[in-house]
Length: 601
Image (cartoon, rainbow, N blue to C red; front, side, top):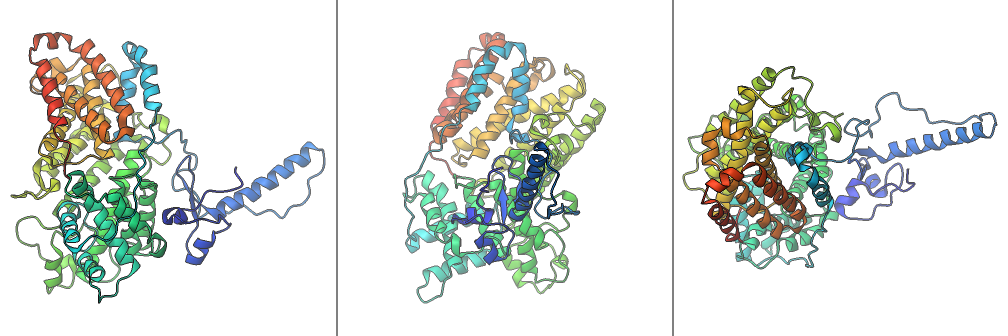
């Protein structure tokens, strides 16, 4: 073990020098908080004092071994006894977990392994694995911090934030944001460091779509750099304000590299939520807006945890069974403030039509369904699952009947979710569009169907139930690609690594389904409506577009093209020769993507 431990989580997030002292660094000692370090290899969290105790024990054991080797009797030592109870600094997951890598259920590598296991793919295996192992460097931006924008530009950034981002992640209170804006831009008002940090982070998030659409020349990262100057003077580990500060950083990190792990931030957020008992119902009555805000902060942390843990295949930070708090109440803040009811639980339902938090609520509901999908079908949700078996089948399923029963139950939940999603007559942003709700529905349908396929007890795949699950895989994957392309054509969606992963996984799924050679006989109608060659060509064009925007995604895009070309040659040659429109389908797919260089979210 290295004598010098990494910088603690608090110092890393603040980007200040950590003196790495045991049992606590100076910064954590002053702040009276736990000095937590993260293992760079496994991502597990440990208290620095716990590591110090282990090092002392290790040194004493080595001394004993040296004495035995030299033939000397053991001397007495003042040994630090191993604690009887589990130390506070033990890792959050199972300590005996094997960490060969962190790739989650959403990555699609389960299908890639199945494809590469076939004999006909062996000649491509080395090239594909080498390509995936290539990790191009992240493009470095040479920028300087942005100053506060003029009032008119600031007002436009604020409006864009409320319209395009706030409705999706409604953890800030609208009135608090407006009050912060007024304090910063009113010369006679007193503003705090946190006011500047919060407002600059709101500007950074909002500027992402405006900059990508060419509306402004101010790069969003410049606002983030300006906000970073305040990190050392605002709370990141303390209370609900600290959690909101971290959530703003995480939201920006969905669009840009920030030099910190979103998963680590999510763990820190949820740890503080639990300390403040945000996951529980209030022990005493609270003002309705205060309780609503606590709910919104907790559920935003929940969404971030489920997203980041699912991407990396790590255990969730909190079990569903430990959550007691209700979802946010479906109403605007003004409705709660102006109501004479003093309890959120007794608040009457507001009138018909969506509210400011309606989109946020349905996203939470969908995350809860996807959490049940993970727990049911993916063994990597277990704290002791290793990366080697994260795509293996669960031992719960004794037969295809058990798999199919779980599949149909969760499919019904997803279909019910889609049927009850709010309808916006005049969508103002991506998150109010029905196509985006369809996209989310198909994305989790694909997660469900893939999980079911991985748990089918035996191969070859046969039988009506298996073909139904396979059909769901193919249709959802095709729909994901089509829907994303449609949203791109409308310039309604922007690019993120999350979207790239979804499209890449969908493309692999289509390739996997084609390689089984069951499609033509089992889903002929869907095969005709969603021609695999057209779908794969469209997927390739979208991934190529991503590659241009995110050069570090190039390896996966190249791998997909290798698989696509081989798949079409081996499995669809007869169909291609009988389809005179094949070239035009490929050209139209590429053309529709290449003509959308500026997209909005």
